[in-house]
Amino acid sequence: MYGSANVSERQAQPPALAISTVIFALRRDEAAGRDEIWLPLVRRIRQPHLGKWALPGGPLDGRESLQDAAARHLRDTTDLEPTYLEQLYAFGGLDRAATQRLVSIVYWALVRPDQADLARASENVRWFRASEVDGLAFDHDDIVAYALGRLRGKVEYGAVAYHFLGERFTLTQLRGVYEAVLDRQLDPANFRRQLRSAKDIVPTDEVLQGGRNRPPRLYRYSGDRPETPPVAGNRPGTTSTSTPHASRAR
Amino acid sequence: MYGSANVSERQAQPPALAISTVIFALRRDEAAGRDEIWLPLVRRIRQPHLGKWALPGGPLDGRESLQDAAARHLRDTTDLEPTYLEQLYAFGGLDRAATQRLVSIVYWALVRPDQADLARASENVRWFRASEVDGLAFDHDDIVAYALGRLRGKVEYGAVAYHFLGERFTLTQLRGVYEAVLDRQLDPANFRRQLRSAKDIVPTDEVLQGGRNRPPRLYRYSGDRPETPPVAGNRPGTTSTSTPHASRAR
DNA sequence: ATTGTTAAGGTCGAAATGACTATAACTCAC
DNA sequence: GTGAGTTATAGTCATTTCGACCTTAACAAT
Image (cartoon, rainbow over all chains, first blue to last red):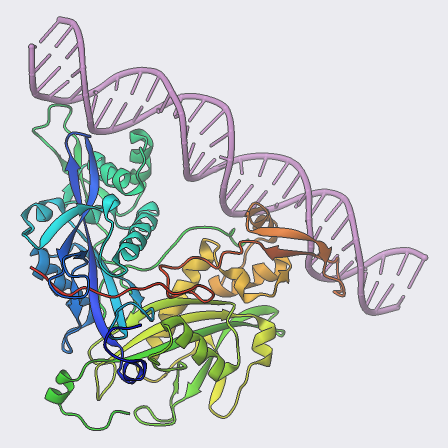
């Protein structure tokens, strides 16, 4: 059932622990005139699943925090510094790996398009459209799908979209992020109205010159706090939620 | 716990992996006339932190999924079957344990009050008011605080409150859960209006008899879906799929 | 100057929200 | 059995939000 190790051997071994990262970046499809979500994958150079594409990752170095390990894998594969990095989930199904019990703690990251342009690609590192990812090694198809769902959730209540963009951005660029993530068109006027009432998005006194139309104003994200996640030893990320539901006191 | 290991030895060792659970239950404070969130803790019977209170948990058994392990710890300490069990976060800071690098995957559970009544308590298992938890072993204070924050977030957008209750419940009981979690009063009429428009809460044809006032209608939760988590291999009733990991390439 | 295109602001009805009032249905004290 | 007290439940109303849509502003290209 499980390759070489027999059942009792396998049970005796402690579970192995690995870190993986799902890295999302925005890329403009000039033809279609819209943004899309892409992610880098690495080709497996050993068994199992040799030759298949997989999420960047590897074993946890004993001296670095989970988050640091995720950031390191990010650098190693793409030379990127993440704008946003958060823990996604710990996957620990029994049969994830053939030879040993394997628990993977998966992080997800957002990077800016200018960074993504610089990002390395090579024979064994390639970028894929997130919507077209399929046939990955292990259960990575499922992990990517789950990460996309989480990304949608976060964007919907307006918590992360700007991490795809540079320090200053136009509302149209930001809308492009929303549309790419949510995969539907948004009304520009209504989008503007909503975001102008968002505390964290503040207009600068600059506009973006050089376009062929009316120069749009530039905005920036002021919520300098990366939204403190859980606890010490795990640093930034984001976690909280908020969304009204019940009514207020009287 | 893990004997004496010096620093270099420590780095050489693979990180230890443990599962812990934060178990929330509702308890009625008859005096104050409101519900409160409580949780069971276990007393540590060995070093480090001997004698301190801590979250139930222990090392991951190689043969059970993460979720199964969490459920088992729940049973072992409280004899409870959780109504709701979900992964909270993986904590992996460098200095969480003195002697060895320790990564804890923490789950959180909600249990019903009737179950909580039956729950075991003993010399080494005691229930505490969630708001008063303090001085726990390791970083468990932080973990509990984080779990409470997540609980609030979930409740706010109406996703979990009924898991604190039995199969049938009145809207007032449900409001009690909201108020206990959010720690503020809600307008009964507005609360009712909102929940009546929630698809998942359906009225039954029964009312709760025996109270001293007008008998309230009983409702039940119809969203039979246990809130789909991420992927296979992690849900209670679900079957596992496979899922391993990738190493680096380049 | 005209045209095309995007930015930015406004209008309007529908829907949701929060504060509040009114009535119904029960128990209990008397 | 009557009235007081309490909770359940429905409804009112002003304010806010949301979605669809229209208008004007500011540019480049021609």
